[in-house]
Image (cartoon, rainbow, N blue to C red):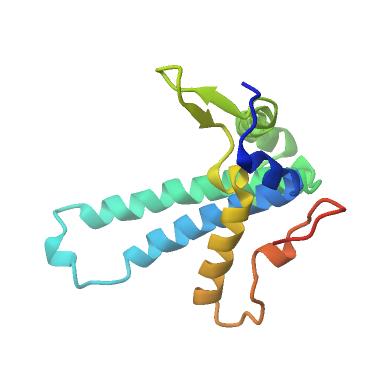
Length: 171
């Protein structure tokens, strides 16, 4: 499906590396927010048996998504499988094999950005939300970082560091 949407023009101003970095930022926020939910104890009486284990287990899922996003980002910025593998205790071939499907999905989403839902009437984006609508992601992630990172002296702590197309600059 190749019809365009209003987000396509905004996305065109971002490199694939910048889009991958936004996805990693977004997944890191999910992980951070999930961990934050485990800190407060006031609602423990309202949580059923095993409830906190469920929340902690969800952190593993968030961490796996962040890891996959980090690998995609590192490949987009030119890191080798050897460089990636050394940080996760895998040989280059093992790292490539482990993340091949995720990288293939990422690459395919640029060629086939949408699929139709089961009714055949609604388009479903194949890119992660932060890459599909990067302008919105920049606004959201910059705001999140400004509110939570105390050592930041930058109004745009996320978007200001993105590698953009040569003729574009971060929002």
